[in-house]
Image (cartoon, rainbow over all chains, first blue to last red; front, top):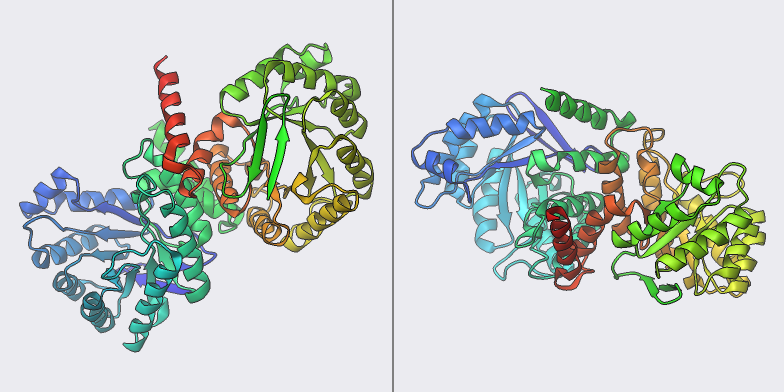
Length: 284
Length: 284
């Protein structure tokens, strides 16, 4: 199944057996003081820089999140989206928990973005899916509902199915739904990694949809987080994740390696090109 | 399914859902000039050092290979095995393509070793399996026969089944067979990594046996080999490999990370302990 999203000038195809599409998580003020301060002051300078840096590091899609305490997302999100699209030509992931902010951003976006996100909560389904339909977007469906995130793969599979069914009822095709199985930290629950991997395998087998995943939660509260994120990401890609949301610079080498060992990189061309670019950057 | 092997004083259990058992590949003269020279001169000094270094780095089992051009393995292998067992107390993997050398080593070994290896070749089955039965060992079964290593997972599955059936006919229980799916380089054939992963999944589902894998071949001829070996190993462990043969120092962190995200490390105790040991080693 192929999900096609686009910026003003570039289309990205997400699909099985193809190179993994990397969504850059860098534009997100959570825990970032400078970005928070700039957004509060209404400045988009750092937003542009972060977008450029991620695309140069290999981001195929850039996630844009401007959620700050006391900030007006309805005003900020479309401004940030315009700033990013003036800077880079990759498709964007419009990331907000506020449907009015999503709509304001969808109004100014040129192309077909990924909306991040709808969940299995009734209110989310009712507010977000009609926007996705109206603006012809694709959408990330988070396997969470009013009871939270189910630990078992059956529970997450049921929410994914519900989101796909509700979307299809509105005329949103299944290929425009990208499911997020939302992994929790293995520091608090040792079963949470395996539960997410099992959910990914189950949903891939049952629904065939593309899947995203934020992989940094898995290591929350533990030391040497990068090695955990790396192992989890490689396993998640093999299990069915086709477009993870990641720290591009840190994880791109392991993703290119996973794609190569999974047969998605003919003649190792992407892998070798990225290696040469890193070498060149190290020399400079 | 649990495979139990032992040294004179220590038993190691290989099994699903348990921490991955690491077999150290370090005692192997292939491509190593100093070790080759020492073995030619009949010295076991470096063999002892390599055994100690690997166990200190976290090896659960040590592979012993003394195959040198013009060397007498029948004399060398039992000497090396005795030298290693005098130095460390972990179980050994007796690694030779010469059945007479394997028998000489089995005669002096105290405990239950892993014999590396039998293949699907008729001659190998006839020569190696009776030794495994006579000495009560466990054995690695390589999915290769007179036609080489099948590219497809069906072909490798058929050889694995043949090895298991032939072993069972002799009274060797299935749990004493550890299958090796033998991955080739993705530099020469882009499908070879995925083919190995698919074979691992198929054989795990069909036969339920433990599985080993040498992961360094996958990156032969390519740059930045460690990141490829790392990605492949994490994916292979998730697919069913329970006791890979590896460069211990390089890969132990990613294996501990894979075990943790796959729910095989309660309270992250092994992961955190190894992290603290590395920190301590860095300070010294």
